Structures are given as C-alpha cells and as structure tokens.
Amino acid sequence: MSVRIIAAALILLAGTVAGGTPAGAQPLGIGTSPQGTLTYALGTAFARVLSETERVSARVQPSAGTGVMIPLLDRGELDIGFANTLEVLEAYNGTGSFNGRPQRNLRMAALMMPIRVGVFVPPWNTYDRDTLMALQQAGIGCIAANRYGAVDRDRGTQFLPITIELPDVRRAVDEARASSDPEPIVGVLMHPYDFKESGDPRAQLTGEDLERELAWLAAQGDVRVVSIGALMAEGADLSAARFIANAPPAVEAIAPPFVTPTPSRAVYGSLGGARALRRVNQYSIAGFYLAVAAVAAIAGYLASLMLRSLSEQLPLIAAGVVAVSCVAMLGRIVLKRRLAFRAALVGVATAGLLIGQLMGTR
Image (cartoon, rainbow, N blue to C red; front, side):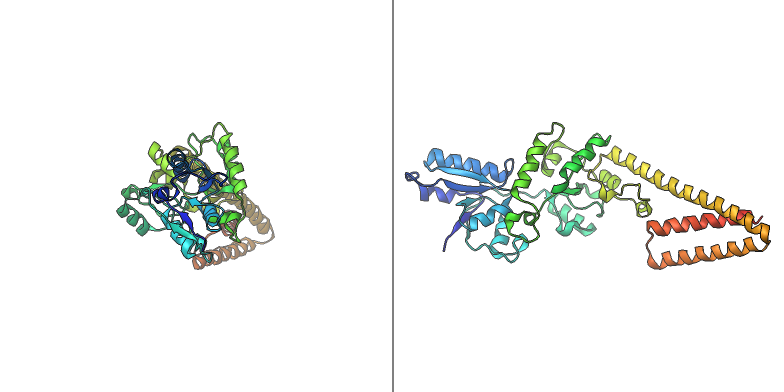
C-alpha cells in the first residue's frame, strides 16, 4: 500500500531522510494551503529546515485549500501535507466534506502546534441562543454565519456574518466602493467541495479561479484580504450592535421591489452606516405605502362621488363591499401568519379605497 504522510509537524521524517537527497531524485513535494495561510508558513519553514540541516531538496506546492491538497497527497502526487487534525480524520474516514471519498493512504506523522479555535462557523450557517451559550463556555469569541441568527448582547460574542460566495467578490468590491460606508466588510464563504479538484459533483470553481480572484484583489489598492482572526486582533467592530444594525428588519418582508433587501447586499456595513441605511429603507417603505394609501383614498373618494350622483345608496353598498374585502384579507393574513409585499400592497390600497369611499358618503 502506498502511504502518504500528512501532519501539522513532521519531526519524525528528519531521521528517515538524513544524509541528503540522492543525485537525480525528485524534490520532496510538500502540500499546503495558499500563500498567507498558516499551513503555507509551516510548509515553507519545514522545507527550509530539510534543506539546511538534512540536505534534502523539498518544494512547497500550495493549492486552493486542504480540501484540494489532501486528495493529491492520497494519490501520491505529493509526499507530505499540512492540515488540521479534524479534516485529516474526516478525509481518512470518508466523512464530512470527504463524504463517500475515504483517503486511506494518509498517515498522521506528528503534531506541531495546537490551534485554539477563536471563530465558529456553524453547520448550514444557522444557530440559536444555546449555541451562543456553548461558545461562551468554550471560550470561542466570534461566530460567522448568516444575518438572521440569534444575538445576545450580554455574552460579549462577536459577529461577522457571511455576505457572499467567491464568484461575487468583484460585485461586492464595487458595492463597497459605491457606498458611503467608512468601514465596509465583505465576508466570503468557501467550502472544500466548491472546487473541482476535490472531485465533488457540486463543485463549480477551480483552484485557478481562486488564484485569479486573489491576484485581482491584491491589485486593488483600497482592498485588504484578512482573516476573521486578524480583524479581531485589530479590534475591528464586530459587536452585537453592528450585527443587529445589519440584520434584516421585520418590515423588510413587505418592502417594494426598489428597496434592496438585506440578503442581497454584499457588504456588512459599519454600525453607523448600517443604521443610516436601515433608516433610509424604513422611510422608503413607509413613504411608498403612504403614497399607495393616498392614491387609493383619492380614487375611492372620486368613485364615491360618481356613485352618489347615480344613487344615494350606491356609495354605501360599495363601501360595504370594500370593508368585507378588508376583513377577508386580514383573516387570510392571520391564518397564514405571514405578510408579504403583494398582500401588504393590496391591503393598504383596499384600506385607502375604503377611507376615500367613506369620506365621499358624507
């Protein structure tokens, strides 16, 4: 059986390769994640140590991520790899992101350093208050999920929701530039199975796509690519207050099409910027429905005058029909326990029509 080594440290390897690389031998292939990651730094340092102290030629070969690198290691296209323990166990057993694809040629050599978890990304990006309590007990200070989750100001948990996936990076940068927000953040979501190199049928991207986007981002003078941990270390505002300001308000369910809904926004706004945008949207929604009610009321008033010219009873009959319609629509909303834009629009228009008709009957 061909055995491949994957670890967070490879001290055990040094004794087996002492004496240098034989002439004509291929350099040792060391698999890591992209440049700027912890595993890339570890792989580079390890290759240097092998070269300087053991006279072993080694080459670091970064890939889109450990989800891409591990299958390469399993197939023998790499000799050594650096990855976190959990992902190695999932790969070996064929579970998690490697579901149904066990990588049985892997062997764990050694552990270089324990990595303390500071950020939690919950399954399917959903969580509840019990999750926040468990994170506090475990000493995990930040959660990265969606913009609809629970929030508890008293626990001190920090929040940085995901706003886009990799294909939307350039649109997000354009949106951030077009906004007047002083501290916009874009949270990018990626999975190992998003990349075709993983062999997953759901994959839509390649490692070259990731490299191209990272190169484009690096060329943008007003963009920084940073980890969540780095933002936390810098003291960036990831507070519960900012999360609440960026959460979709309840009134957004009945927003007209010209109001951009929160889930469609690619930017996680600053506290002040998000609150200002929230006010603008709320005023826009309120103004829209006031205008609808006013137009409907005028139409109802004019219709009532027209009917009154034909018969004194017709305006009252028409008003009664509209009133029954209002009650029926209200009952439907109560039964469904949900209010959407179309129902709100018809309801407000009907109410305005009724008010106008009643005014015309006087």
